[in-house]
Length: 327
Image (cartoon, rainbow, N blue to C red; front, side, top):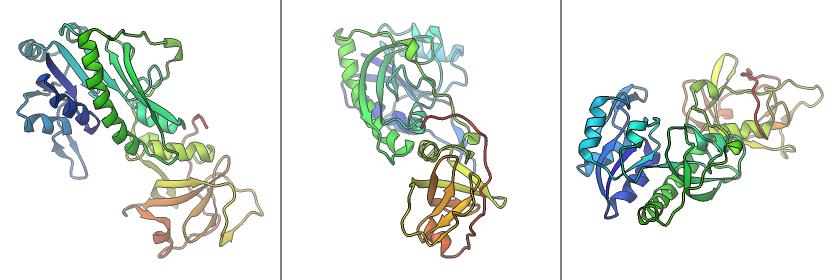
C-alpha cells in the first residue's frame, strides 16, 4: 500500500506516527503552508511537516488544492489511499477520485454531530459529557462521508479542549490503523450518515472569546473550557483586558470574606471574594474566578493577584455579545 498523508497541526501527528510504525509506505505528505505565529510572528514549521522531514518523507505545501502542480505531484506519488487528519481543507473531486482505495479522514467527533473545523472545542462548549473519533470515507461534502469506524471518548467535567484533543489524537491514530487494515481487507462496510442528526462546529475566531456575562454560569464555564488554549476567553475590567482561564460554578460558596447580597446585581458584577476566588454574578448563578490573566501579565491564580491588588465589591466586568448556548 502506498499512502499520501494530509495534515498540519499537532492533532495529526499521532496518526502519522502510527502509520509510520506499520508496513504501509507513506510516500508523501501534504501540509498547509507555513504561517507566522507567536508574539514575534515568525514563520513556523508545522508539527506534521517537521515529523515528515525527520523521516525523509517528501512534503508539499500548496496554497490551493486545485493547483496543477499539486495534482502532478500526487500522480507521481501514485497513492493507493489518502489519509487526512486535521488538514483544514476540503479536497476537490480530482483528488478524491485519484486513489483506488479512496480518502479516509480522522475526525474529532462522533459524526454526524459537530461537522466542521472545530469539533472538539464545540463539544466542550456545549457541555457534552462524551465525544469520540470517527474514521470516515471522504466525499465532496464537509464531513458528510460514510462512517467506517468510531470510538467513544468521555469528556472530564473540568477538561479543556486542549487537554481533550491530546487524548483524542492518540485514540485517532490507533483507530485509523485498525480501520485501515479492515478497509484494505474488505471487512468494513461504510455506513451512511444521518444528515437529519447533523450539527455544525464552525471555525473559531478571537472574537468568539469575548465573555457574555448575561449567559448562565454553567454555559460560561463550558465556553471557557472549550476555548482553552485558543482563542481563550477574555473580558474587561475598568478598561483593562482580563483573560479568564479557570473558573468554578458554585451556587453556595462557604468562607466568603466580603459579600454584598442586599441589592440585585447586573451580570458581570463582583459580588464577593475570598482569598482564593473572585465571585461574579452571571445571567443565572455565579462564577468563581480561579485563574486569570490581567492585561500585560502572565496567567496567575487569583490568590496571587489579590495579594497585590485591591478588588472592590460592585466592580463590573464589561459584557460581550449575547448569544445562545446549551446548558
